[in-house]
Amino acid sequence: LAFFSWQNAKIIWIGFNFLLLLAIPWLVVKLLPDNRPLPIKYQLLVAFSFYSFQSARVAVWLGQTTLLTFALMLGVLLTMPRHRLLAGVMLGFALSKYSLSLPIFLFVILSGQYWVAIISLGVQAVGMALVTAVFHTPIWTQITQYIAILLRHRRLPSMHVGYLFPAQLDIIISLIITALIFGVLIYWYKQMNGRVSFSASAQHFAFWQFQIITILCLWSLLVVYHRIYDVSIAVLFLAMLVYGLQQQQWWLAPYQKKMLVFTLFVTIGILVLPGTVVGRFLSEENSQIWLLFVDRATTLLIVWMISLSLWLLFKLSFSVKAVSPSQQINHA
Image 1: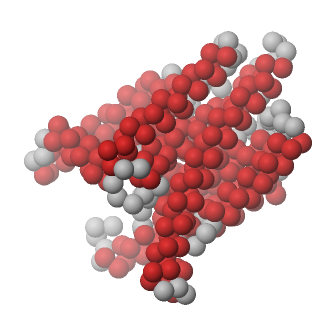
Image 2 (image 1 turned 120 degrees about the vertical axis):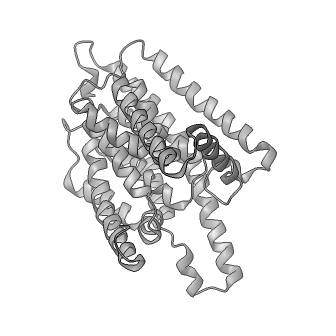
């Protein structure tokens, strides 16, 4: 893009982001277990809901790297372990936006795909070496600058829950939430008594693995600085909910199913709410009130989504325990 004028480069980049926008929901659907594929009408529900997300629209219009990073994250999951080199390179590029891609790096480690993780770190190391060669900035300085930027951004208006609290409590709240979420995940894993394995050697992910990926990505939205455009990855939760309900992946009472259907439509409703465009129809003061409402509603929605995802993991675990030992967990 450096060879084009600013205006032409912007048009090309927005066009590229638009293509990513079109592709991403189908990549998400492709991650779902294909032994029981999602009917096309539900795939379309996931896709067109994503196209309507304010976060996705903003990411395209502002030319953010969110959609590119998200597409690379999905590419990593779809290519490992058959193409470790390709997966590692994609993860390496995705780590350039580490606040968004860290959950996938953690999942790669949990899955035992250590070579993928090593290759990704190698890609980052090469990138830092190039920056050092061109701009004469030592690698250690680059790392400390990344950390400083991350800490500085935490007090900027964003989606992470710590922003709702005073500055002195921000990091403490995020650490407590992190400890709680990972504590629950560890407890669930121990409850399974070896019935599940994070091994990515299977051709496709099991549904419980998709749920873990969703939880990790929502955790990132909850505790790390993110603007509205990064909430695009919440489409994972939407796909999880649609697939789990349609394929009856959880042991649920009728009222619980109704609650999940209600949550599905509330989630879509909040995520498609308009943003700055309302400024054309409201006064500046009312416009700011509206934007604050949307931001807070989105943050609270993320809290609800991750709470519900953790609960549904346990509802799925009861389903897993109910199958006979001869059945393969990776076909749950």
